[in-house]
Length: 136
Image 1 (cartoon, rainbow, N blue to C red):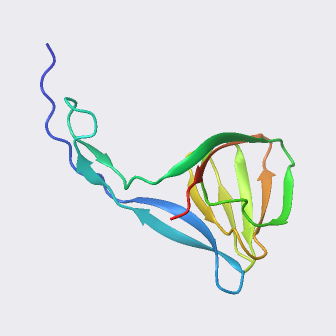
Image 2 (image 1 turned 135 degrees about the horizontal axis):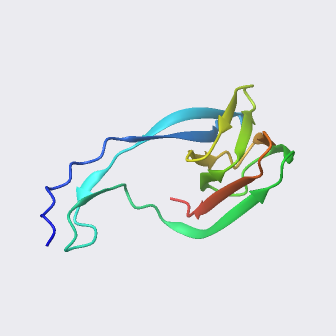
Image 3 (image 1 turned 135 degrees about the vertical axis):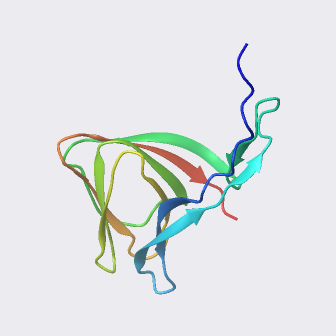
C-alpha cells in the first residue's frame, strides 16, 4: 500500500507571453502571469493547482514546415498557443522579435490592425496546439 501524499502546495504563478493590439492597431508583446488556486479538482485525488477556467470554442494542431513564412497578418481569433515542437519567430509591429520554442505558451490577441509576422526558424518543422478562445 502506498504512503499518503502530503497536501499539495499551491503552484507559483506561471509566466506566458501575450501578443496584443493597442488602440492604434499596433501589435506588441507583454509578459503575463497566470495565477493558480489549490483546488479539489478530481476527488478523491489530492488537491492540485488549477488556473482560472477560460471558455474555449475548439482546438487544432497546426503544422508548419521548415522555412514557412507568414507575412503581416492579424490573428484570426483570440487563441492560446502551445508550442509542441520546432521553433517559431514572431515579429510585432513595434519591431520587437521573439522566439517561441517547445513548451512555450502564448496568448495571441492581436485580432485587429497590422498583426504580426510568423516564421519557422531552424531545421525542424513546427507543431503548435491552438485553443480558440471565446470572447469575454
